Length: 348
View 1 (tube, one colour):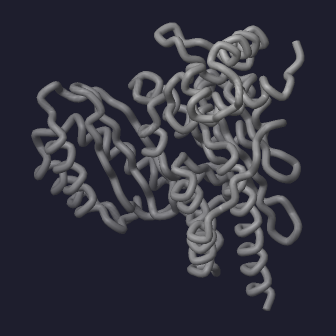
View 2 (cartoon, rainbow, N blue to C red; view 1 turned 60 degrees about the horizontal axis):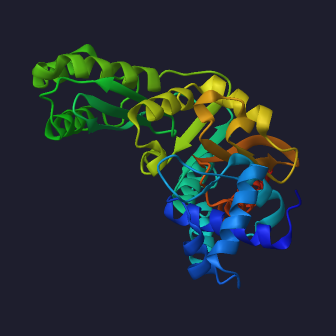
């Protein structure tokens, strides 16, 4: 069956609406919002054809339709129009690279922060090996009764996560207290500078939360230990948790388990990166069960005319592709220019 102009318009409308609302889209919604000049009955017939062709799906609990991964791929390849960055977003990027441009590690970290800030998704930067950093921040979040998320961030941007069981009596206030004490005691510390007297002091102050504290201290130690040759900067993890697709605790646990495995994530990005330009990988194209509900927009950054590393934006398959692709193109170009300036300054 041929994808004619009307089917393309209806597929475009379904994807546009679903990306914006995360709600299945019905024929009446399309007829009212997109003014295609045809009746809801005609739209329903076209939707049935699109479903038969594999471009849309019908959730069991809804009369509306949602895009399939095949539908997203068709949209990205043939229908998508780039959404230009706003002047404000361009200013954010420009100002970001005007600071700390002498330090490669800082520039790469800024890149990850900017990507996650502007796209509202998680950002990944594969960077050359950096020295072990200093403790920056720990945060514990109560997900459900008996389930909590702990995130440890070091000064270089390395992030570690765990979802773990907590006693049912543990409250959000308890986790906030543990986070506050650790942030106050460990700020700016390296593994070498954390002395046993400081550890004893922390355990004494938080003695009734020893089990939770054991895990937190283990993550702090792991985050401050030098790792493999390539390092991952992962930013905006909470952006993933804010997406309705990832409100399921088990789904989040599976995804975060992948994201914290640096070697595996590096290999995944390396295998999917484009030779040039920006690439979009959708769901099952990533060949990882943990990523089946995700898409990644990838770009390669350069220094001195040579490919140096990879940038990625991770979000649900219901991603704002038109916007993220434009952001990625701008960021890879801006980062490459910033790294070239650093190299030239060092030569001079």
